[in-house]
Length: 231
Image (cartoon, rainbow, N blue to C red):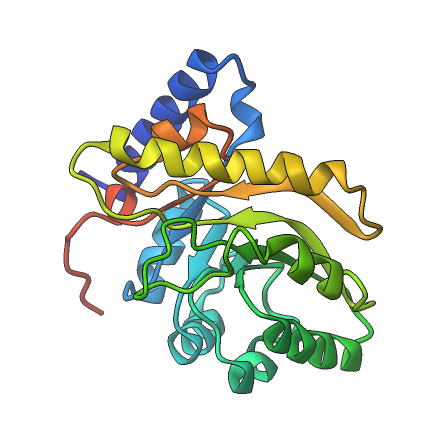
């Protein structure tokens, strides 16, 4: 199927999941995960109406962003090294994967040079998987309080990546826990911190994530498929 057809089906599934949860479909945004896909795939999706794209790798993103001519918005969703922040400064509207103070401080330095504000999400490693980035639930509030003191950063919410399960119901407790953490942080009323965004859910489990409160779902394979693109 074409990207346009896949996009239509995804929006239908998102709408069904939101209505099942008693939510407005407009409360969920689809982040098209375009890592490893060429610029022409991004442009094809953009022509079909997709505007928000998420990239995981700095060098790939920089090259791709220079090629894409359609009006799109970029999020950075992958693990980010502090020494590469400079390269994406001003090019992304949201960083999903801030998991430590040192990274936040480098983002602060680079966006300060632009006299701009960078919106970020704090990544939480709820399952404690050693192969995944993220702060712990126990350290979350301390990290957010420290990041909130940085004037060129704005904490907009949380992100998580649960373990992989063949059955998406296996991921639901992790999504539910992130939603609980959002409530805890919001109750603190920390200046400069809002809990508007909850980034969770991918191709295999995004409907469960939406039912548990996701506002951003990161979907790659279900949109772009496994097809090969040739220039």
